[in-house]
Image (cartoon, rainbow, N blue to C red; front, side):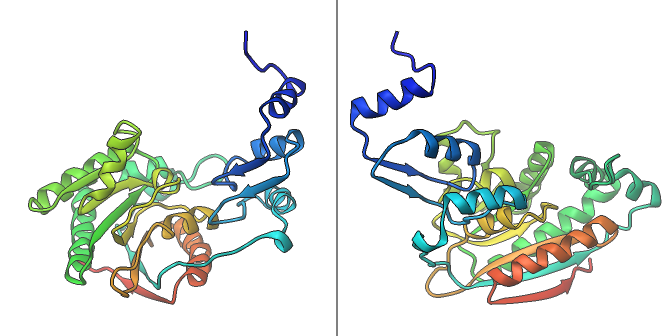
Length: 278
């Protein structure tokens, strides 16, 4: 019936069609598939393509290093100059709010944190802060601005409504699963301001005009940060700008931002710590 049902059939299929080269894009993502294909394919040449040849989990990182030996890798660094601003803000959460933000495994609960930010008594503060830095980016000559959130599409919808109301003369894109995949979603990257998620922006995308990024996603994975920061483009020789916003009212975020700072320092030509005061 033409279906390949096992490893032997797969190997026979590869030999029958005469495949001589194996190319894997985003090689750091599908690690299990990468290992299986390496075991099954009997080809002359293999090319692994990735902007971040590493994994967050140290054991997986070792396996990936075996698949991507450093002595046979070609590294091409073409990233533009990156200026990073780590911006401390404080929504003044109560002890109950802080307690609810930590789950049973003692991890920071991102969805609950965003539920907190979307509350009527907090959302005005968030709106004012976002528009403050969008306006600052525009005044600095931004070509295209991305706002990255995580965890809840409801937050993405509120951010889009906020930005459209504040900047009626600007086009606002929604680069997320809310928009049908393919050319329709890719067209959202051509807008003046793009609202997206860390997963959508961490994939294989090429926003050609994105010069400024406002990061509202409480994650500390070095791989995700490198992928997302790597989407920025320097225009006319100017540096691109990464605004990293974090809420100092939550102790878990204070711990997290220290880990994020380590990664961002490696990626940036300069890193400045600032405080947002409404």
